[in-house]
Structure formats: C-alpha cells, structure tokens
Length: 274
Image (tube, rainbow, N blue to C red; front, side, top):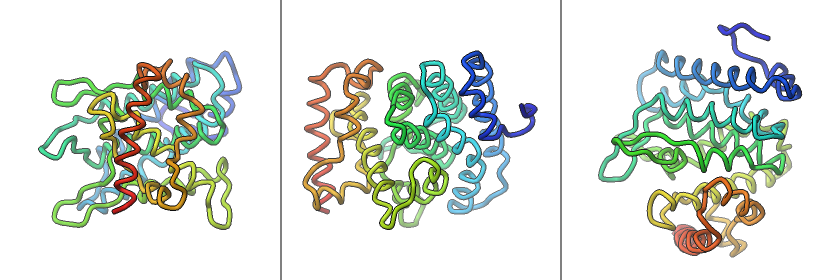
C-alpha cells in the first residue's frame, strides 16, 4: 500500500474492496485522499474563476477516480460508509454562506458536488445505488449555523461567475466526469448511455432536494430538454430504488415521494419549455 504521503492507486483500492478484513483500512485510505484533496485545493496557485475551477477539478481528479471505482465495486454497507465518509470530509472542511439568491457554493464546494456525482455514476453503472442513497440521507454539512443535507447545500443548476455568464453545472460535470467514468460507462457513437445516466442522477438529486426546502424546488439539470422529446421524466433510478431511498431517509414515506415527484416534475417540464 502507498504511504500516507502518496495517492492511493485504483489497483490498491480494488484490492481493499476485495478484502472483507480491510474495511477500516478502506475507510482510512479514502479519508486520507479526501484530506489531501482539501489541502491541494487550499494550496492551489490560481487566479480568476475559470483558472481556479480547472485547478480545483485537477486537484480532485485522483479522489474522483477512486470514488467512481469504489462505488462501482462496493458491495456492502462498510464500503458505502467509507465512500460517504470521504464526501462528508469534503463537505465539512469548507464553510457555506447564504445570500438572497439562496445557497452560494464557492468553487471548493463544486469539488464536493463532483465527488457526489462520481459516487453516483459508479453506483448507477453497477445498478446498486446504496452508496449514493447513504450520502443523500446521512451526510450533513453546516450552513449559517444550520445543519442541512450536503446534496441540498452543494447541488445547483449553475455556477455563478461575477459579471460573467454562468456556467451550466450539468455541462461542467459532463466535461469533467466523462473520461473518468470510461471504464464503467462505455462510450457509444452518440454517448447515449452516459447522457441517460447523467439525466437520471440529476433527476434523483433534484427530486430529493425537497426534504430541506419546499417540495419541487430542487435544481433542474440539463436533462430537462429530454422531456420535450420523450415527455417522460428520467426517474428510473428513483422508481427502482424508492424503498432504499426511504430506508436511508431521502424520503420519509412513499406519500412524500409522490408529493416531491409531482411538484418537481412541474418544475422540470417548465424548464424544458424555456
């Protein structure tokens, strides 16, 4: 295994995942990698929004790859807990602030969102979203002396730049994660598989957003454009895993899910018509 001053490799991570006796070591390795990422972000030599965005994404690239891999091969609660622990460290080492426009995430928070999506892609590709459900339901962070779910605090439709056009979060996530997920989401001619997973993950994170605010107020991702073509919201992941999501407190009940879904779908359809 690599020393604590070195980044763990994907091969080493796979070995830990394959060893039932390595659950504590897995937890420590992912936690150390998250802390290294936080230090690298804090020490990034960059100026301006776009330059720092690229620098932070580069600093998080190693951890992001490990989280995609870990989520894909995770097969038990101990694995899920280790992945959630890494996201929890990212979420709670950076302060959050609010404004009249709601929660403002700085670029360091974008790294937390990247980490969540990395877990989501690996989990969705493996057809086992337990790690993502655990993150949605259990990982909390502090905002203005209030504790909220991390997926509420960092999820957003746009990355706002001062005096410049905002960056669509969906498109930035697509650009950053596509190459990292190649092993688990094979490229096709139109890359329809990756696009479909992105739509489904965005929808899941959006529809569960209502637990911390009013139902239906979650960010609407780029996948909303698919509604016009199919007239069907990309809710496959949610429908297939509803019991799991309720068990992890993403929803309190089936009834609450129906309320959140109905109101979110209206917002989704409205965005698609813009």
